Every structure is written in structure tokens, then in C-alpha cells.
Length: 67
Image (cartoon, rainbow, N blue to C red; front, side):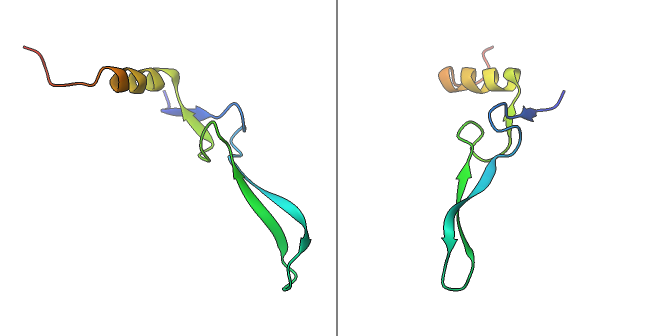
């Protein structure tokens, strides 16, 4: 099973360039880059078991093996 799946919010297109309209002095198109807030520009998010493990580790940090 893969460790990540395609982000449901951006469908894998995590970063886009948005034109501001007009050009600069050199004739280049002015753009702004926007990243998906769900996957933070990666295009994929971890599977549910991986996210649950990460959340559980954040809430209950492993302090060592109990014997």
C-alpha cells in the first residue's frame, strides 16, 4: 500500500501560477505562485493509517519500550 495518496483538494496540482494581468518592463508576465493549503504544495497526503500513527505519536510520544 502506498504511503501517500493524491490530495483531494488540489487533485495533485499543488502549486499554480496566477497571472496578475499586465507585464513588467522586460515584457514578462507578472505571476504569483499559490500552494494548496491541505497538502502544503506536495500534491499528496499520507494515507489514513500513516496520519493516525503520526497523530497518536504527537499526542502520546513514545518514551521507550516497557518491559
